Image (cartoon, helix red, strand yellow):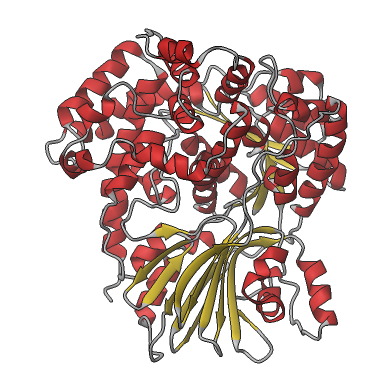
Amino acid sequence: MCGICGVVQVGGEAREVVSSAQLDAMTDAMTHRGPNDRGTHTAPGVALGVRRLSIVDVEGGHQPVMSEDNNVVAVQNGELYNHDELRRDLRSEGHQFLSRCDTEILPHMYEQYGPRFPERLRGKFGIAVWDDRRRRAILARDRMGVKPLYWARVGDVVVFASELKSVLASGLIEPQIDLEAIDLYLSLGFVPGPRTPIAGVRKLAPGSILVIGQEGVREEPYWVYPEPSPEPRPRELEDYADELLPLLREAVRDRLMSDVPLGAMLSGGLDSSLIVALMAEASSRPVVTFSVGFREDEANELADARRIAEAFGCEHHELELSVTENAVDIDELAWRLDEPVADLSALGFDLLSHLAAEHVTVALAGQGADELFGGYTKHRAAATMGALGFVPGGLRRALGGLPWPNPRLRRAFDAFGAHDPSRRLLAMSGRLVNGDRGELYKGALASVRDDNAYAVVEELRGGLDGDPLAVTLYLDARLGLVDHMLLYFDRTSMAHSLEVRVPYLDHRLVEWAATVPSSMKVQRGVSKRVLKAAGLRLLPPRTVKKRKVGFFRSALDVWLDAQLAGAAGERLRDSDAAYLELLDQTAVARLVADYRSKRTEDAARLVFAILLLESWLTAFTRRAASAATPS
């Protein structure tokens, strides 16, 4: 709902940390995140900025907010769904309030409970609280990482912001490329935290606080993503559905909190349709729904979305576009994303957000269900691997070593023969395959160690082993969910000043899902079993049982052909292209030719990743550098 930024001094005699021009540049680099209001706060040792998208207490919710004695100051990007309950508790302790805005509780929460106050918050948020007496700042990010928060230490200050472009606008950070991050991007399609593509800039981990004080800077968790802990004796599928539906119903009701128009993103599939059904159940007015389809997409779901909208009496808006005529410019997409994310779904979601923002300020969406309950092909594959655990390891590895001609088969058997869960995930989800890295990389990028991506996945795995599906879901939620899907969701929606809420990622529902046995999620090729069982109680069977369709997936070839035939393709062939410091142009040309001849998904994804990298290196880094205010 907003964008926050700031600079905090670490120790020493308090001084001005940035000029007013620098703070203005940081704050206004995120005008799209908050077009309704703007606020700043400066004092020796601190500077805070915020752009506000007004959703709760539109008139009275100006930020920054302060405690009664003005010694504690807070800014927030996000929403606190239990703010009314917390406000009542704080009032009983003597705290006083001037508005209904959820952000106003934050200084008082800090006063009452100290630096770990986020433990009591329910919602999605990036928060900064400044304690003037102690000269201490607390930065906090929500448990699932729905809202972003970047930070970097530069000398005796920490600079932070909701977006990377705002950090760079401070002029305190040189936009130097992090080579290991670029390798991770090309390997995975995104940059997993805490890294970012800019050297020295980090993402605050989901469920963590950053304490900045006289004694230094430390990051610590206040919540840890739950490891799978299924019940030893599984109950019936309907028993789990009985528990899931009330949790999801409450999560949806919480996210209807708004003083401005609110709607829903509706694809016509199970996940979003169930959210719409629960919204209709909780609302006295027709739910406003939005769908976008593409003429070139063989799996266009507009008709399915229309049927759900009619079934629940929604006020439905839809738009059918052409990927070649209506797609967002790739340079503009790179700027909006902040970090390169090689998923063409970002283009589709950008257009869907544009449509929704013409009618509402807030929209609910169905994302996150796949990562919780096993909705992807790789999750069905992992479940199959679990069922075939009796096959000797030597035979699995031998099968994985064969030169399978079909890329899908090759990935499947590579994963089947993997030595550990991290290698299995990379075999199923990785972008670079069969020697691409050695042919493609050059210069300093070629010196990045071969096991860079593996080391990152292994660190997140933390030794977790056992059931392949459970481990895959755990790693997906901590990797791709946060820094791939949620990242492009936040950036593309906020580029249109639209706040998107994700009920499936309520942390109480996430904690419950970790206790559900894998057999209740995926079994015998059937995915999301428990969610489907719950969905059958509210939705038409046709909606529940239809196969999953990837957003914009089948239109990738048409879009990519148009890009390669146009200016983006010319840039790949340009002798002055920015990517040439990192990648071999001859190898890139071979990849493009391979894609054009074989039309494999692997080739398409890698070519798209390189196209977006070139745009990010030029459109983002140069634009960000030109917008920076010198320190």
